[in-house]
Length: 337
Image (cartoon, rainbow, N blue to C red):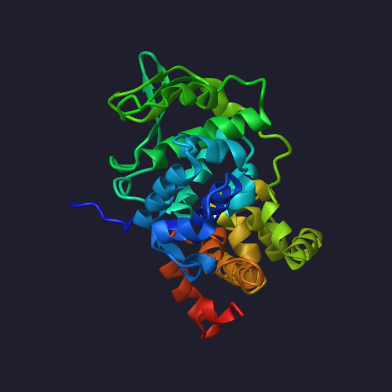
């Protein structure tokens, strides 16, 4: 069975972040945009998808104008993931690094959509005799900067938030050894092998269970005060529906909303939860559907349609758009005023 081909694009927000970083190093903004063959209108919309070819051209132009061949390594070193992408905030809401990796794989298409990873996660854990490897399965042989920036994002964020933890033990890169090879190990923080068979980090296995500092399961409530108020009111609710909704809000983005797990968290059997909800005139699926609608309307006040779709548990924006039209009779883009 053939795999689904995904058009290679990058988010307008990430394109803008790289643009601003190159400008901060002295590159001319107009020259950068000309090199990428893109106008500001091309990434002004938070839902804009910029062709990966334009992102690649921005890297190449930025390297030339700044005289910095290691731009892909310096970009994650100088920027914080949670400040340039909602995916960073999602990852920070997990309890452990293993949980954050799971969310990163779920939401990574918000940052970049690439070929070669339609049959599984982009960042795959692979145990081998020599240790545990984190393999970037992105297939863009002519754009090694994309992969290097992703692997450097892991090491730089770890060094920023957990400076005492040894995360990477070794780095394998498929690209031939470049002239600026000396720039790699200080940023990737491990010995680097060029011309390898894959792009991967050999990592410390205990990283998966490393607890995240001050995990915020309700991180999404920060996007709108109404969401915080809703959560508080739901937690205080004495109805079974209210208790179910209070449990579901911080889990909507995971897409893992099962009646069995909610019942366990409430200390009830599945059948008892079913009966109690039925007595209140609703089913579990109706509670989930209505909650998704309310939270979607809340998030759309400040977030993009793509971001909102993922935060309320839809893996495809098109499916969210259909659901939103069923709920309201209108397109979610029409709600973005």
